[in-house]
Image (cartoon, rainbow, N blue to C red; front, side, top):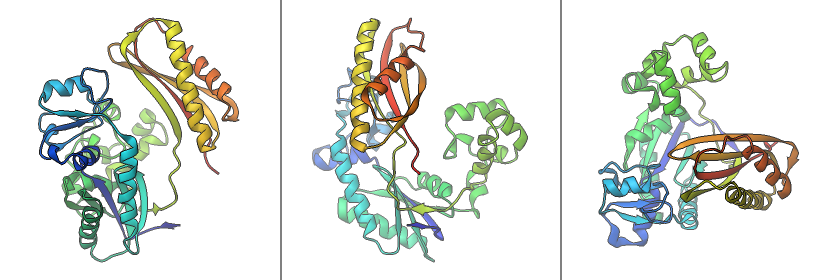
Length: 346
């Protein structure tokens, strides 16, 4: 079932992983908590989530745990526990589904779009926050928009535990002078490329020459970035189950790997684990990619298309080996990953 609602609400759970851990360990309430890897800041791993108390010290997602420990030496470091997050996330989404006349589209562990027809979206957002709090003990922020893009961006202004409305009526006032990276869908690399074109703000991107954008980013993505600058896009919310586009496994080495035989052994192990994940889902793979992070921190990806869609373990392993052969492996390696891209659904 799909809906084209009058309003799109974006629900984003506050500091989700850290909040789950604090709920299990109430003595951590108010303390800086960092979740990631095996919870050992002496090992190579990155921050998955930091509590607001830890963020006050500059700790953020994606940061190496060692850096987080330097910034916040008093932080409590905890290992990631995906099964626990799956369970709590499922509780949250089920709580949202109990609300009447809503379409719930799950985006991940900690966020969802809601489609609704209402004359008072703020009251509905307050009901959503109350329901999540009552059913799970967690807090959430709710963004309200007339498109998915605006609702998603609005949540950033609502955090933590607030409500914010962003529509065509206040879009220019709120967003015009913000950097292009403030737009959902534009990351740091794209923002730097835009800056090289003299485009730094959302307003400048909105005024940019579509032909120039198409030349730089392609006929599809160039004009699309300009649409983002206007807060455009659709308002469709669908409760169809989300199908992942790929499955991947990776390993961060605690010491850099320089021996090719050792690297090949790790590649085989990762490829077999990915093949099992694929087999468990009962889907077919059309492409296999290998990610290599060289020391100190330079990442490259190479991929190989498969002759035909398959879930055969030997085929995936062979394709991973072929992809690895496309790298110049003359530098020490700190991370290796294998990804299988699924055949698109009909």
